[in-house]
Length: 427
Image (cartoon, rainbow, N blue to C red; front, side, top):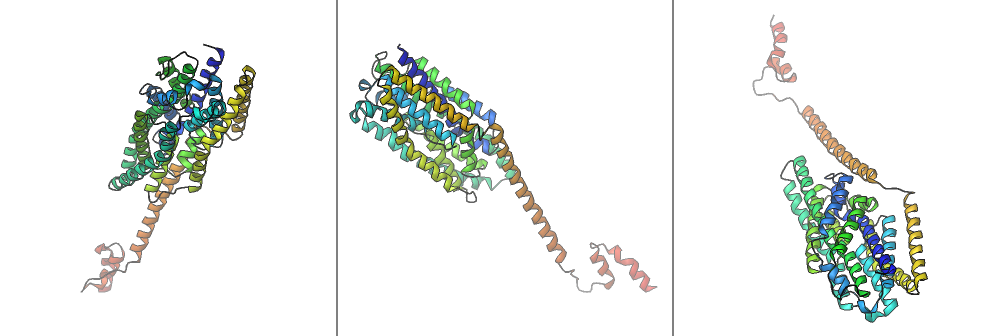
């Protein structure tokens, strides 16, 4: 195995790591927002389940390694350039806290790199259209509609019981649904790195065409995405859990269940969809399904704009990086150095406005406190209005009511209160 192939494999695992912390929000943002799971516990649980999910399927990996581009017409340097484009786009969108698609960043980077090196004929347009672009358009819509319906049903159920009891029940259910998304994320997203590494090994003849990923590739990809997920992408968790809508536990459960169903079904069929777009669509759908829930459409609009930009932006960067890398060893080293410097700069910028587990946890506690204060204020207000209404009611006397008992009526209806005055008048 050449030095370049080793560098490409390591770069693919770096991309997998960034995919993990970039997409942690997909599985755990809503559960953290509703208080179903503590932030640190949530991301560690997601990391473990990502690793397990990596072993469940290889259909998406086969789509990338044997169907996206013509592996006979590209080189490891081209794949390296595509990975650089995907990594940089992941880091930029993470810095601004917007949940973009790591998957489409990878596809865009690979397509741009292949196009500039081998021409458009090396891109399998039918595969890109049927298994990348079509899921890109449909998956968030399907997830949103399912989540909207599930949220409407969930609130119909919740209104029939005690609010505290139903909230606790939905929070416990969220632990299961969030775990299913984490499992699905590992199944879907880890396979993309598996596919890239397998594609690299095929281009240099270490594997035959259309090979499935070897076990060591599956294990390495699973460990990389699990490690990234366990670090927690707190900026995007904050956006997805707080900035789109104020999420309650029935909403969170509905969004997570809808997302898990769509992602697992698509992974089984080999569709390389974006878990980020699926979960974001489901969160928006669940917010719309809750009549009293606010939807911050400005934030949603920014997210949609980033979704549209992801493929072309990553393609441009990937094409440029592949063009330089293809010049020779010096070009590859230069692209690697630029990747390191720009990544370090982005990390330095992120330290100016840090977002951590404590920040996300404080936001969750604050929202819960405000909610409790609102409910408490409403209760106190209702009690005050009720007391005022009772005090304003006139004292009613029955026919033949003795005058001496009027004082009794004014003192809570106790007849003994008016008796001493009547006795004095009789004397």
